[in-house]
Image (cartoon, rainbow, N blue to C red):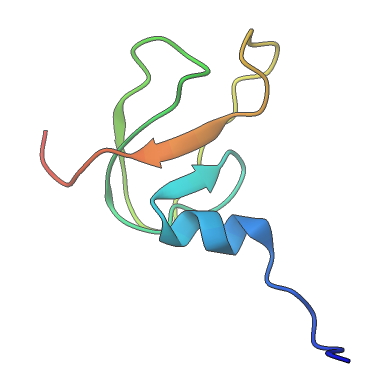
Length: 69
């Protein structure tokens, strides 16, 4: 039986170019979220990804959109 702790989903999703709001940005570049119209913005690695409370989408997940504008 494997008693090792499982990796947190946030870490796994960040590797795939996704990052939940409130977490540090895993990679510098442009990111967007479907939770807010025209949300595409540049974030530096380590910046905390913003959250948009009371949105119609639900949980805010940021998606990597490249390193160039």
